[in-house]
Image 1 (tube, helix red, strand yellow):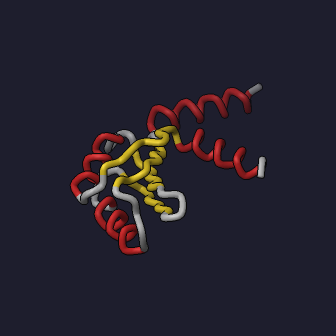
Image 2: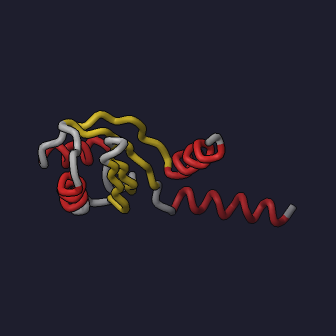
Length: 110
């Protein structure tokens, strides 16, 4: 019983005081064609405040950005993409925990 209460209290403190990481998956227009396109996106997005990780995939035509929701928004990230010449369509914007959970489920169904 005490352990359960301690775990619940710890979780509550983390949610209140911790940063909320979110994962934004978007597809760019025009499409990425090569490593130079990927590098251009990564190089420029890394300066956006709150972004912790950037992954690109030419094969899937996706840009996946992990960001701190307390420091930036998906609109700010899309605006940064627009500044470097890419319009974007959001495929998903969810908490990191939900994203990781859905990613695990996709792997297990393969």
